[in-house]
Length: 159
Ligand SMILES: [Zn+2]
Image 1 (cartoon, rainbow, N blue to C red):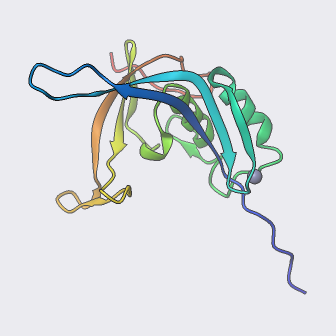
Image 2 (cartoon, rainbow, N blue to C red):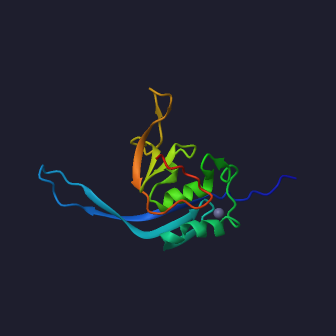
Image 3 (cartoon, rainbow, N blue to C red):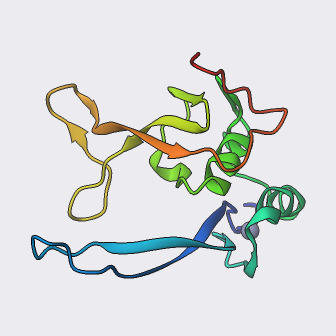
């Protein structure tokens, strides 16, 4: 007899941000100002949602949820920097979307900044292949280090 179907789980966390149009520039251009709100949201592909929670509690909340929402095969696999889920959660609390970062690296902490490769998205919002390099299109980005890596995330300083 076939086994019953059960829902897949994959927890995702999102930092909640706010934005507003900035003051007009001298050249007539205008930028959006964006800031972190200190809040985050965790959802699971099974339909669970945490509602808004304090961003600082994302890492421990994800760890608590992991028992009820066991990650798909591979989510707890190792990256060169530690367990995939731990590296992803640490990036997230620093305002970096881990879905856009190849977790095999390179990722480094450089003084008070995190330096990492970010996968680019096309107009349809999808990652795409760079015909020139034959791999996913990416660029190096730098973001302020706001939360130090936990003990199980080993990100080597570059200097
Ligand atoms: Zn779930």
